[in-house]
Amino acid sequence: MATPISTICLLRFLLYVSLLSLKSGFAFEGRESAESHHVQPTHHNVHITSLMPSSVCSPSPKGHDQRASLEVVHKHGPCSKLRPHKANSPSHTQILAQDESRVASIQSRLAKNLAGGSNLKASKATLPSKSASTLGTGNYVVTVGLGSPKRDLTLIFDTGSDITWTQCQPCVKYCYQQQEHIFDPSTSLSYSNVSCDSPSCKKLKSATGNSPSCSSSTCLYGIRYGDGSYSVGFFAKEKLSLTSTDVFNNFQFGCGQNNSGLFGSTAGLLGLARNPLSLVSQTAQKYGKIFSYCLPSSSSSTGHLSFGSGDGDSKAVKFTPSEVNSDYPSFYFLNMVGISIGGRKLPIPKSVFSTTRNVIDSGTVISRLPPTIYSSVQKVFRELMSDYPRVNGVSIFDTCYDLSKYKTVKVPKIILYFSGGAEMDLAAEGIVYVLKASQVCLAFAGNSNDDEVAIIGNVQQKTIRVVYDDAEGRVGFAPRGCN
Image 1: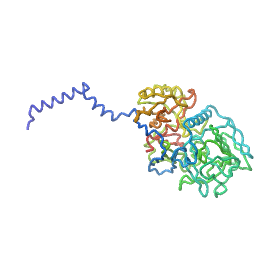
Image 2: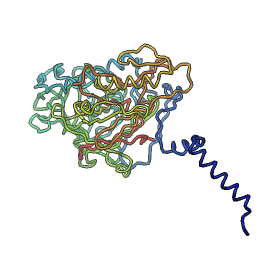
Image 3: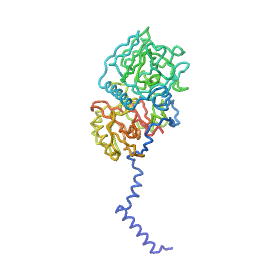
Image 4: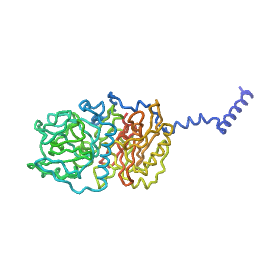
């Protein structure tokens, strides 16, 4: 049956009105909605309470990954079993001051090669000279097994440190207080000392900054950290148990007989740097020099440290080359090529990025940027946060806000770009540092000059799965890969 002429006219009229409204902009609201479906958000909508620390541990769910994994916790947080044994957790000011010491150590080591170091006095197991200082100590811990029978020990894990060490009986000179029983090598069936003429003893200088010494043909190590902490003792071999099935015989580590410093109640340190004596190198036959971690999103949650590659790495993780720097080959260097804030790519000349050396570090808390780059970050961040009241800065922070009267706030998204197409799309927890609700600060700081190395700290790494593939010389990021 033919369509009535009035109906045809009505359809034509409606079509005409629709076209007219599109040309005139009347349909803009619906069109924007459709297009914005493909546009990345420029801000994080954040509930203030979600940024505040909790006194109760809330373990984070762990994905179904078949790799060997260790639980990661903040050593001063409620998820740490060490916390009840510590009288007072450090204040934010103390944490930031310790962070400054670590940064100063990294930058001084990278500014020039340190030639030599003091030999250790074998009879007294004295601490190494201050000129041979390495890094300050980190703030995330894992628990591993050592010895036969196995003893569980909680160690700080650190991508900027080379050797692994723990306090050992009989504590010839001094041992600080730790929660677990101090490891006693005399009760282990698998312990043995490393001899002075061993090739691994000779490698200690590159790993510690100090030439090794000897005591009755036993190799002695000594290491001092930038915050004044130190460990000196016997270099030894022992059975290391990462999980019930991942066990390594003859793992080389430091058996500390003179130890002091800012280690909390931990038993020592787990070294994940590139040196031949690091855990990464010593387990290379099984894990292929590959490890990854998800840091806790807050001090009241948990993360994990995993070894070996996973099935989803090639799809979820975007890699960037990690060069080896001859000044300090243990570090993982990256090539940053850009930064965006709130959807804006900052107009920083490529020459600034190309002349800046960058390292990624699990032990540094707050990222440090060259002043030329930081000033641009600071300026745009302040513009986009202009609706919120500014307050005085504190310590290394100069851009802080009073958010105590807000339930939710908009925090501009920040993305760090690296060569090879890798990106760090920072979570809100990686953009602001909360001292208290009335003092929430931009979680970046500027270096003194553009020549100093830039450092990507652990605050910026929160919620991002970071993958280290040293066999291929690369580091990768999986944004929100820790969910």
